[in-house]
Image 1 (tube, rainbow, N blue to C red):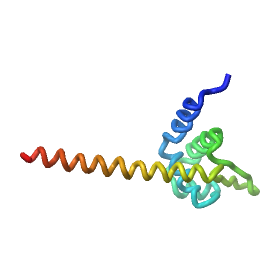
Image 2: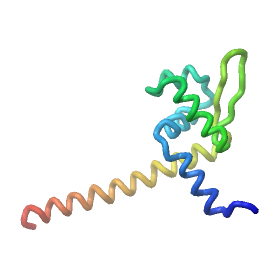
Image 3: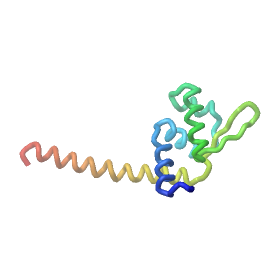
Image 4: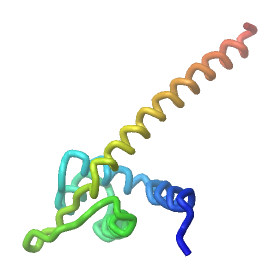
Length: 112
């Protein structure tokens, strides 16, 4: 029995629901990177990064290739970068709306 599309989408978004995973995907937007470069950019132990990379690999969001003793990671598709860009745009709208609401609330608290 196949998984309904909405359930597969929910699983994708659960996979994206970790700050380290988002940061890894952001860093990989510029092109493939070896693990050592990812470690230099993210404040996490090597074992923790390895676990998060494994989650991203299982979800099909990143690929890995061995270059000698170095493992290099890359986004599996440019669509991952497009999804991150959409997330930034949505956050921009949501946060702008919240800021406007906060201004309105503060104005109301001062007798307006």
